[in-house]
Image (tube, rainbow over all chains, first blue to last red; front, side):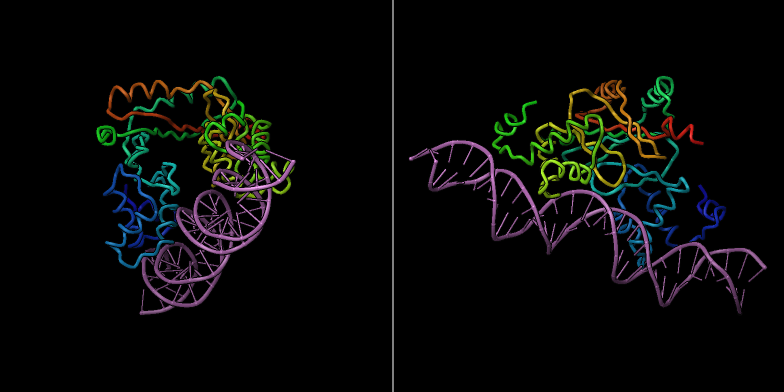
Length: 139
Length: 139
DNA sequence: CTCCTAATGATAATAGTTCTCAATAATGTT
DNA sequence: AACATTATTGAGAACTATTATCATTAGGAG
């Protein structure tokens, strides 16, 4: 939770840019953002930040477990603050909106894989695609 | 199965390039290949094929349902022949090898989503990451 | 306050993919 | 079989997302 502590404990420095990026991510909990979006939103707080710094910061935060990388099959990666709650996403193929869903069934699957094969599963990626309520009623 | 028929029924033409790409994919059933790999393998059959044609052909085949696009989080997209059998992949984060696994549990999940929310799920993407037997014993 | 060096911003470089366009060739028609 | 039409092709330019480079700036230990 405490960014300063988490950074310093690994020999990293606490900079205004990193604090600004964290704030943006925290304000958008549950909303996966791509680096460009993070860049634009962070600029409103820290005007001079560069895009490269945003990329570097997101990568660092991922290392630290502060953010999670989300794969929405959209050409750019998306990141969201890691709240600890395991969830995945439903992406509307019509409007691109993203919803969360909890209750991941993959834990069961990982279990059965562990039994059936010699492959040791350490993580997984799951996304659902379809139509959101708004796009469904709009036809 | 019959490429010629499938192409013509949609107004597309049957070309030696497309036949060559299909053959490569068929010979590599169960092995997700990226466009560069398909390009190299296809060149052995049809020497003059261009990379752009490979990209266009894979996209077309995907439209026709001939191939499936696989997301291995590797910087490039991967494609494999669509045999109709629903399966997903286990990617070794150490050596990059890819194994298939059947028995997808997501159908159950799609079901429960359909009941719990108003989101209509039409497809999903699931990949598992971990360590393959070879990499496990090698330590 | 000083020094060391991590971090930054600007920009170049890279990787993967798509676009452009003139030349070629697959198919329907004669 | 020859022709006309137009989809397809190959080559390379263009584009997008991301990473690397490097001189300058600034965090923080002493």
